[in-house]
Length: 169
Image (cartoon, rainbow, N blue to C red; front, top):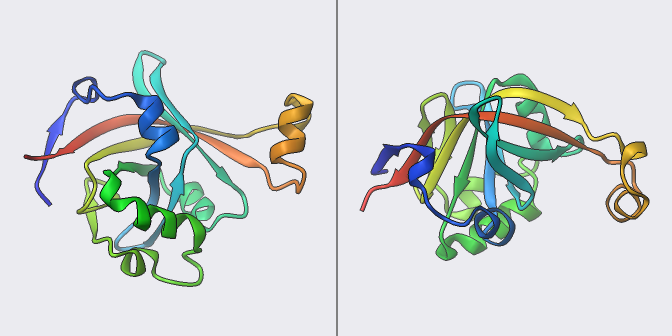
């Protein structure tokens, strides 16, 4: 995997398109202790506490949830359209039941203190700075009804971007 370290400011892409339309793989854990990835399309990037930050959301029922709780580091890996099928697979299968990366044709790599994939175009390595459950009772009624009727709530994670890697040309 030929990646070059860049500043998050150098990325220069549309975060709404990258997160909401292209999706990303959220990965927590390490090669040594085990890890899991999941496809996400909810998140945000910006500045908080004078640092570059990413937020992501994980339901308690997801296999990745336990890894997020156990680890201080996670990665957000962005891919090109050629990997859409792989991301779709990772979003519809559980790491409890299969080796998602192998079945999706992705090649895991350890990048700093987190796991990513050789096929990624951009990787944010994040240090978990805050986590909290979304209180369903405080959400607008339409949001609670649309997304939390089954009581499977999300936990929000705020991660400081401690490294950013872009695929080298």
